[in-house]
Structures are given as C-alpha cells and as structure tokens.
Picture 1 (cartoon, helix red, strand yellow):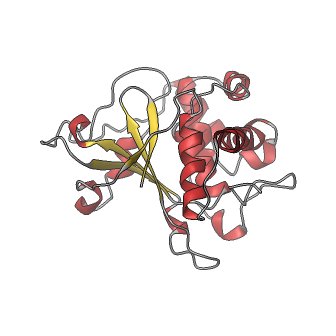
Picture 2 (picture 1 turned 60 degrees about the horizontal axis):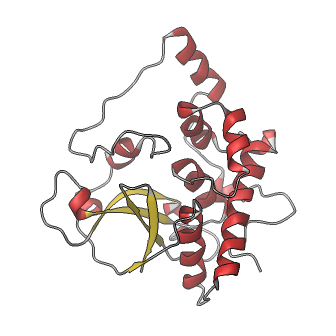
Length: 233
C-alpha cells in the first residue's frame, strides 16, 4: 500500500480545496520577464541563514520565512533518525516519516521502493502531465531558476536524483502532508550553541488542520550542509 495516499495510477490532481493559490503571473510570463530584463528581484534579510553555493540547494527559503513569527525560528530538540545517503535521502526521509506517523516500520527494500515511488510521482506531475503541471507553478519556477524543465525531467527519472524544495512543494500537496525542514543550530549563522535544530522552511501547513478531511501529523526533515537529509523524530 502506498505511503502517500495521493499517489495512484489514476489522476493525481489534488482535491479542489488544495488548489486555491494566490494569484500570480504565469510561469511563461515570469520566464519572459527574465528574458527581456524586466524581472524584479527581492533581497531577503541577511539574518536568514545563507546556505552555501552549489547545485540543487533550496530556492526562496529566505522569503518563505519573512512572514513567519519569531517562534518559528526558535531552537527545537528532536532525535535524529539516520537515512541512507544514496541520492534518495530526501525521499527516504519523507517516506520513513510518513510511515512512522501511521505506525508502520519499513524495511530497506520497502523504503527504497516507496522513495522511488515518490520521485516518480513528482516526475509524472511535472514532466508527464502538462495540464496538471500548471497547478504547481511555484515548483516550476523553483526548477527553472537552475535549469530547463527538459533537463530536469531527464534527471528526475534516475534513481540517484537529489530531491529538494521543488519536490517538497509538489509532494506536500500531492500527499496532503505538512513538512518542516530544519538545519542544525551550529549551521545557523545568527545562532550560538551547538545543540538543537532551527526550522527553515515549511510546506503543506494547510493540512495540519484542514477544513475538510483528517488532520495530518508533521514530518520533520533535517537538512545538513553536505546536501543530506535525515528524519527528525
């Protein structure tokens, strides 16, 4: 049985109540602005952790925290459940967390299969279904900041594909799953001390207490500067 109930061989379109998004320019319009030089960029607060440069890092993390209360940035304490670092680590951490919330324990083969299922579900939405892809404009923009959609679709079909913000944007809605990403305190430039974790991004918060349907428990992912994800419990 799939860990993510939203994934099936039928249409994976999210329920109508999850499709209401803030009106914004289409992805095509944003790309045209980039081409003709009219695009506007916002400098985020330097108090937000500046992640190291390199491929496949989070996009727009700073702006996602600007409107969040200071409580969101406080140090929190959890145990770390290590995840195998085989390129699937983000997907592995997510399926382990969703299974744990359901009282299930996956063996390594089940974990691998479910992680690959999540990755291919994102591919189906973003690469194989043009109409459905338009429902995930934030993910499209996050992807095309770094590379063409064609190149992305070639890479995501590989088992060693590294997941990140684009995939979390899709899966949080597709699985109706609230997700919070943390970093270790010692990696936060504005924080002293070495213990605990700082939340840096949140996805699918509307599913914590939805107007319709069952509330979902949060899955907490730990992201470290060596491009690896573990699970926080």
